[in-house]
Each structure stands twice: as C-alpha cells, then as structure tokens.
Image 1 (cartoon, rainbow, N blue to C red):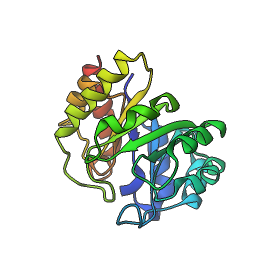
Image 2: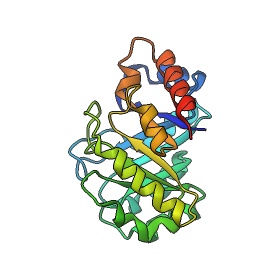
Image 3: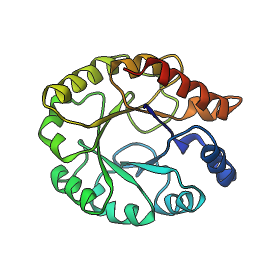
Image 4: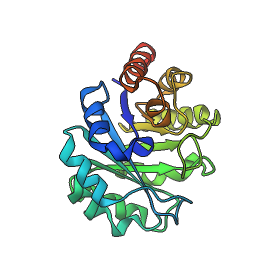
Length: 221
C-alpha cells in the first residue's frame, strides 16, 4: 500500500479544525506536518502548539518533518506534542546518528530527509538507524514549487541500495507531487507521497485525495 500524507502547510489556518476534520474523513493515511524555523530554511511555518492542536483533532498518524537547524533540541517536545514519526535533515546541525537513536528511544518512527543537492550516498551510513527516508523533490522552505524530475533517479538509486542490502525502509517524497507524477513515483519505488498545495488548492480536496490514492494503487509495484 502506498501511503498518502497531505501536508497542512497550505491549509487554511483560520479554519484548521475543519481542515483536519476533512483530512480525517478522507482517504488520507497520514497527516504531514512541515515545521520550519526560518534558519535551516528561509521560512517559518508553525511549531509545537499546532502539532498539539492537530493531535487533539485527529487519530490519523502524524508525520512530523523538522526543517530546523538543531532538531535534536526539540524532538522530545514534538513527541510529547503527539508526533508519531519525526523526520530530521541530514544537512542540519546535529549528530544525526544520536538524533535518530533518540527519536527511536522516544517511541517514534525515525525519519531522515535529504535535499536535492545532497548525494544519496550520504545517507548510507545512517540507514540502519531509520524507518523512513524522505527524499525532497524541491528545495525545502516553501510550498507550491515545481517538482524536480531528477527525483526519479534519486529514488531509484535509493531503492536499489535498500534492496541490495536487505533494508526494509519506507521511501517518502515531498515537493510538487501531483496526479501528473504520483504514478511514476510509485513505480520508481516510493512508499509514501506527501502532497500539499495540489490538494488544498484544488476545488475538492477530498476528491483530489481519492484520485491520488487510486493512482497510487494502480501503479504500485
């Protein structure tokens, strides 16, 4: 099964409860939470209080993506806020191995994210400590950016490495994902699709989620 994880980065925060209810009643599997600090990426989104609020509003799996410079300082707080998985960046300023071990010790799924400009090989020493790799399809910081086609080759390279080494790790992608590229991404080896603006800027987000799920099922390998 391919996981669909709508990102609430582009949600209407004036009606956040309604947006979360819509996602809870939809075919979405997870809810993706993009946390930005204005330092690691040139944007600020939201923090722990919003995660706490979302947790109170839904039973969906909360997939928290920390685009912050020193994630090790905050992982315990995000776990307490209700995160089910916590993903940190390989490019951030921290001891990645120690951070991933701590995430696991807190009872969270462990994720590591990699930006488009960072070679996939940089991940290899850390894969034994993760449950999921988040391959960014754009340079992180803002929603609505154009998908980078090089992502297909990067996912394929990672998938082949995982298979060769007998590693059972999810591959997630984020950035510019839509009905145009979701099928090929799944065929390439993606297990989880993060979709933000394409859902929330559509006329009917519930139908858009349904369409994305159907595409994922059709192209699953």
